[in-house]
Length: 215
Image (cartoon, rainbow, N blue to C red):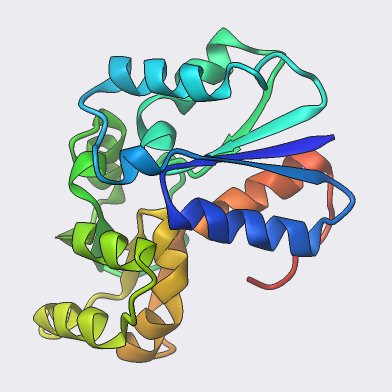
């Protein structure tokens, strides 16, 4: 069984590292499309074409589980599940509703993700007051391996008065700065982590009870 991790940058590398550590019995194949970390998909059609180009060798192989993050999750994952029903796909989906009583949410995402229909549906169904922050600069710095604490704290300070009860991480890269976000807002703020959601989805497909680690 192969686990194919498809992503556009360092977030996918982090995810693959974690899978290799926690589930070493599976071979992890990395399909990291670094070109797209700087060049966002314009629409669902181009996202599907780019995805098919990169994943064609692994689609319709029963021994492969394909994990897709970022742009593909929000624009094309449902499309590929429908088109290739025998293929196992996993990934972060904006379709999941957070379990929290919070009335205010801060959504950390990127400009390309915010343009998708799936994202707008997700925000609509939140039924809470939201503020959004595009973390495109963060993603670039994370991909370059830069020290992030001061940059993240500087940007989050803009939302201190908003007092969010929920932080939504809408990009797999943000798993790398989650500890900084947690320290800034404190232990009482709920965090909806797409990275963790993708791990749970993978556990369900693999039939692993109790999940994978404690990430």
